[in-house]
Image (tube, rainbow, N blue to C red; front, side, top):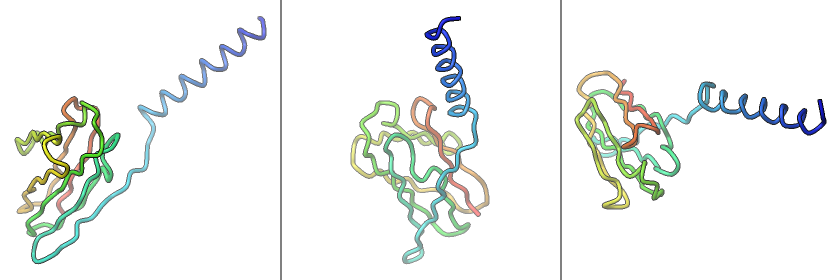
Length: 125
């Protein structure tokens, strides 16, 4: 086996390992909490190559607003979809798009981009 074939084999194995880690590995994600002001909790999620923070914790029983701050022109991230809530919002119409989240009961509301490639969740506790 020549040296070039060995190098190609090593690079291929490293690339396969990276792909497996990227798609199936456990990745730590930031968890955001809402600020409560005048009886309303509000949290900002930055949309830039994904959602940051991707997980947000809200307090049960306190009205909540989630602000999506659009900083990425990627077509996939141009919409945010809360399937459980029946929400599909276009984020390109304004810099910050606000979505009201029901907090009357505990639970998790998953959201994703329009193509279902980037994900996040809102946890009501």
